Amino acid sequence: MSRLDIRHDIDSAVTVGDGETELFRYVYRPDSPQLESPKPYLHPIRTRAGHLVSLNRPWDHVWHKGIALSLPHVGEENFWGGPTYVHGRFYVQLENNGTQLHRRFTRMEQVDGTAELVHELDWNTQDGSPWLTERRALSARLLSSEAWMLTFETVLRNVSGTDLAIGSPTTKGRENAGYGGLFWRGPRAFTGGRLVTAEGSGSGNDMRGQRHEWMGFAGRHDDIDATSLVLMVDDPSNPHHPPQWFARSEEFACLNPAPFFSEELTIPNGEAVRFRYGVGIADADAAAAQELAVAVRKSL
Image: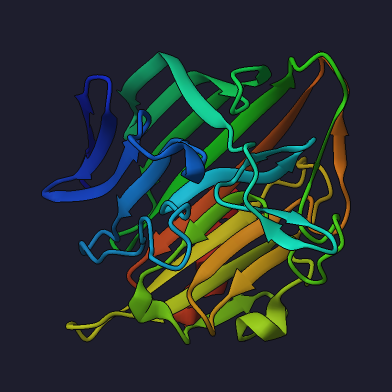
């Protein structure tokens, strides 16, 4: 297997490459409008064969950004983007779209075949108030000739001056809309794809809200005769493990282990919470999900 390379575009993005294939570009200083709750994101994301498995700023939800850490309800603030769910009024555009602001990198290196990035961020509300600080670590490694994995770890510390409850539209009253957390948006061609877990498979309507340690999404590409598999594994130490999953396949492709799906998590002022995930990306179909999940969990 080849060695991963890191390219840093100063004050913009970091790209991790596998030979001639760019596996992902991590945009840490986005130029997103405030309405979209500016946040770092990974896009484009590709398999080892070079097939694109992410979508950025789709017309239906312009705040969806490849893979990003997105939280719709942090107290009364929105770090997801767009309107906020208000029970009895549905979605309302408020002046509460916060920003995840890159502060500095503390590590960026290739070690024993793994590309590692660590940086610090400030989560500020739309009016500029400090809400959270974050230490975020991303690493990429090759698993096989067909697969690679991303490890995403975050430590969020509450610096708001008050306790913060992190929730979702479901905790605010909207049924079966518990999104929030590490969120992947797939290509348009993946619409109608197949979700798979250790217990079975089905559509987003079948699987949404279920609890699983891992879940994968198998989708077919346009133009090429190929299927790709994106799979997320929740670390056992994460709060509310195993998570309920927010997933769609009918309207569009998305996957999200949602720790706040139906239950808020409160971070007391001055304290921190940690989350860790493994994301497997493979040139494979749904039949390879179990094997990929084992490999990701072992490396996580």
